[in-house]
Amino acid sequence: MDFQEQYGALVRSDPAYEGRFITGVRTTGIFCRPTCRARKPRPENVEFFSSTKEALLAGYRPCKVCHPLEPRQPIPGMIRALLDEVDARPEARIRDDAIRTRGLDPDTVRRWFKKHHGVTFQGYQRARRLSLAFERIRQGESVVSAAMGTGFDSISGFGESFRKTFGASPTKLSVQRPISVTRIATPLGLMVAAAVDEGLCLLEFADRRALETELGDLERLLNTRALSGENPLFDRLSTQLDAYFSGTLRVFDLPLVLPGTPFQRAAWNALLAVPYGQTRTYRDQAAAVNRPAAVRAVGTANGHNRICVVVPCHRVVATDGSLAGYGGGLWRKRWLLDLESDRLPSPEIGG
Image 1 (cartoon, rainbow, N blue to C red):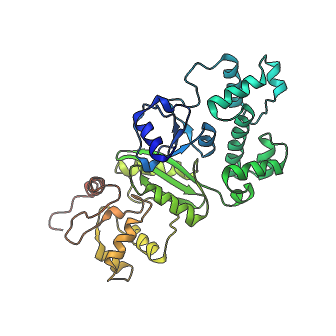
Image 2: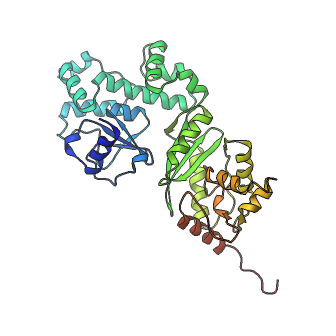
Image 3: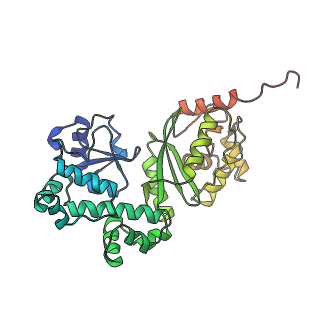
């Protein structure tokens, strides 16, 4: 199946495609079955997997609407018990002899998992252990400790499985940690945030068409992968966004990672210097970076700003005062400017 066939089946919620693919929605971090009733994502925000295993290992979590980890038919009681046991202790290994002691036939269990998850029961357990080990490595645990603590018998076997799944050695990823991606609800809609250890590297509205391009650029510039995950910075970001949207915060206090060309970084730093509640023209910004003739180039650099609101590209307007472009939509730009203007003290009469 090609992308168009899969996406068409998803839009139609076609039951004929049940079990043939799994949909990952990049802007929400969830994966769904083809017949999911949730709102359909844009095609640029979708990637398809052949199994739930692949979606799990790509960092997605199961949808709470369509429950893609559960088959359409009721799960047999003993299979349910195995699933619950793996969920409770993914680091444990349930071998064939242990399955027999539970009154089950290992071949029957293998066929059931192969049919419903595209992987054998042992493969399902291994996928869960790999995901758990990857999360521990992302949190700073050593490769040896993560491998042994998640039930792998040897470091070499763990390393081989890890490379096949994540495309890089665990040693490399333990040094170069991935970009963590999360979603944050705001009054202007869902936002996607991404961060590395050094700071925030992306904050965009989830419906921005360039979002996937920006994430791909970050992966290339930072030489790592973007995966759904946690970062201690996300709590601070969420708290400060709440304060900003409620009108009680004017300056964000967050470490930022802004990979780009020297000119782009200069333009983005000039944006950070525009005070809350004020605006600058593109000509003003060009003068601020000592490139007065580079008005159009400044506009292009602003368009490549990956951290909206915090790096306030919404405060730059055209020379005639019109809003000009904004990746999040001109209605959001107007809303943000109105928010900041409304929170400024009233000017003193005769002052």
